[in-house]
Length: 194
Image (cartoon, rainbow, N blue to C red; front, side, top):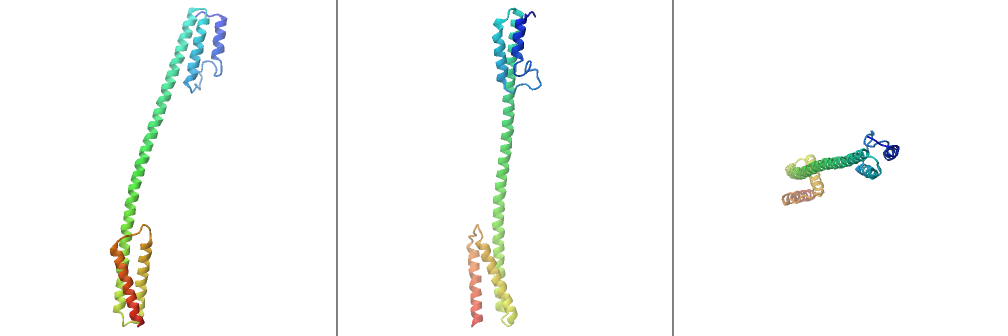
């Protein structure tokens, strides 16, 4: 390659700007492909000033190499962006599936909670009614009668607390049995007063 001093000086000025000699060779290549395109354009701008054909051809090849580097950097950036997007979509899909599963589990847990609460209330009502029956059967024994009634009242209070919780239980059978327990307690207490 035959170049004179002016061509060598021009190349040195262009390539030694900002990023050292030839940015593609440095350890930290530029992140933006536009820098490679700028260098290719600058080198192509020097081609007409070159005196020898060999220097012109070498500069054209160098400019083409920088153009290819820019294309490669673009492709690599697009590829990395596509990978990141696929990873984000995968994570998003997994989170969405987990949320749907959690939603289903939440609804199942809520329905189990309602079912268990309903069973508990029914059991307390049956227990309260049993205590009222026990109190009526124990008319002969004054001390045990009060214990039966206290237990029946405690069962009614517990039922009322659980019926007041949200979400409300709209079971007509439970409400009917609670009213029955309340009524039987009132009747028993009226009989005791008279």
